Length: 437
Ligand code: HEM
Image 1 (cartoon, rainbow, N blue to C red):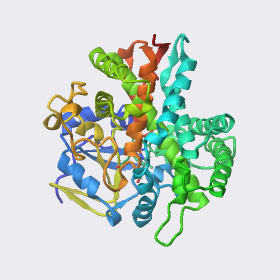
Image 2: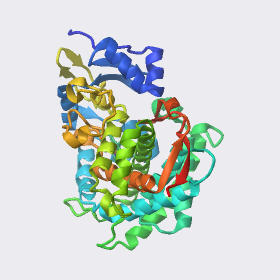
Image 3: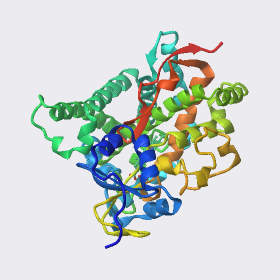
Image 4: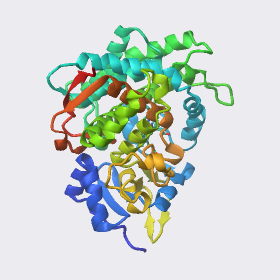
């Protein structure tokens, strides 16, 4: 028997840190145990965190029979059994082959005006209100953007009803459900899980008719994401069933909008905390016309978003082993989870030189490979919409910073706190918004 992976294991402080303040926990683990450490969370299992480029590569190469569901099984109640994040092995591979090209082939500029207009419409409503929690407002923007882009909807009433139904359902899905399977029991509408199930039924009652309607009117030129998914064909000529399309659509709406809103919120906060970066970005934005098509080309905007995603990335992602794996001197056993630690990889001195300095310029001067910098994960489960996600964040930030000034209340008080699979400013980013002259 080889050496054991060091780490806090099942310590209550580590479990609490994992669930609430993962960055602080990971800094502490790296200081005490080094690059490879183990954390055990009841209901989720034993995770071995890695961040050295060679270890990250090993994790990202795992595929097929080497791994079982990553985060998938946890999310099954939310997204459904046909969601790409839940599928495993061959079924997952085939689904990626079916819908992956849809995302690679997206003509991103076709979505620019929808994102730009949605962000501006929302920001106008916030003007001159005394203090707002901005994070939930940003999530409303990115949610509406995603609803419009996924369904190609313009009808305000349907957009609002669907947004509210999904928001209600997300609110009722408590964080502890995610990690404690035993709580996922339907004991009727008076229990927390039962109440959540009823909100999910309300969402389905809107989404299934939208799928039917889209399928009935499917045209070659429709550029909404649902139409593109419904047109995709497997080798045998079959496409997504209604149930498959339903689960994929809910997955895209949820994963897409939440991650994007979080990144935009960190952008606003970090710009406030780094006036020189904000001034340089402003100069770049002011130098171009009020034209969303130009936003894709702006180098400093691109670098700022990349640096923000280095500074506050999704903390980690997961590969659950189906077979034992040799990692240097350690033998990991199934069903251990191998967790490439995105945060610690983004803080390595040997990769970044000055990792503790917020400096977007590093992305103007150089590029970083997928073993060093992977805010969208990697390998066979890499974010299916990485380019689209990056683009959406840039476009939303562009619309907001070009038109408005954000005065954040006490930006130094904000600390990173876990929200589901990513990390958000703990105070919800309180601030006020003024139109720029
Ligand atoms: C800035 C925004 C985003 C970030 C930071 C982000 C990050 C991530 C990460 C870290 C993963 C896990 C990758 C892995 O395990 O290797 C992931 C997976 C995924 N993301 Fe994103 N994402 C973003 C935006 C989006 C958007 C806009 C969509 C959809 C429109 C999306 C859809 C997905 C899906 C479907 C998966 C699961 C892929 C699979 O299991 O095969 N993401 N994302």
